[in-house]
Length: 378
Image (tube, rainbow, N blue to C red; front, side, top):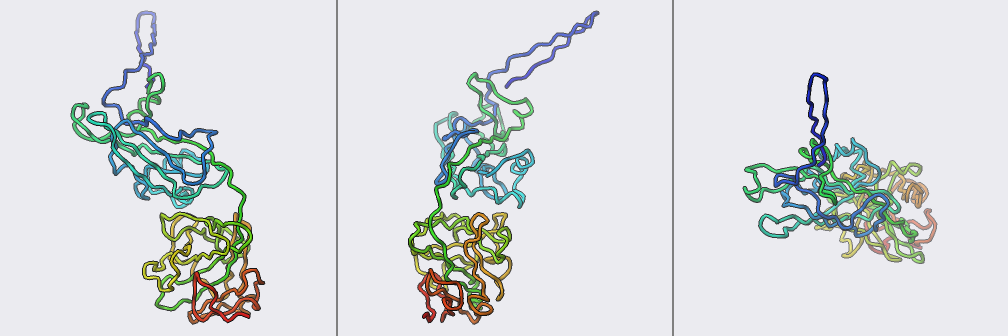
């Protein structure tokens, strides 16, 4: 750590002498710091979008509870877009404000102890559970709320723990001010993602259920198929909406399981986007095993109890957006000649590449998510 000691020597001429004292070598009371980070991102570094993993080595053992991604006590973040001091302050006092949650990538943390005796330290593996946006700026953030674990009284301490700080530079100098050294300082590492590959696949909405049986909780759903002939389809990140002119009013499609991963849909494969509180274990719809199951989240990244804003009404359209561009627009007046069917029956599309009108959409005998049409098709 660099700091100066001002020495004032007063004489009859008022002489003032200033000296800059070299920093003391790191003492046992120095706080934990980051010994290593692989990969080591910085401005200009480009990293992959999928299956991104960071390996972090701390100089000391870390209290397990202070390495967390839980909303109310998170200390490790992966954030998209630029950061300012207010955002950093928010991360140091979790949970994040709702307006910022949508910029946080879901992570998993795995820790292990390495070394022995007083040289024990913590290694941390950080894994991104989402595919990152292409050609975008991200920050890996480890906040000063991370604390070390007392190992032995020989360290010169009797109780308590110390906040994260910077490790010495190559010259052995501890960076930052004395205040920062005592209080700890949040570490952030900037990088950019590789460009996303050209999009493939052709999503088609092929079934809509708006009036499930009363005993099926969370039973509203929209079934989407990846039409043959256009390659695989990554459905995550698409937006489902009731407003054909406003993607921002919709909700983002994500895996149904909160820690689930998106997998590309093969040509001809069906996916079901269902309400977040559907009973997957009981599976009252008997959705076939292996069917890609999705739900939606609010703009904040939180889950609701409904697929869209409120239940889907009889006159509501079902619209699919990709990066603000409208991909599919299913209007009930066109496909059903009025409103959506009720009495626990869905509306199904007969021919995937056929028109979105009443000649190609028919009422099913029952709801059949993930299965071939159960309607009487021409």
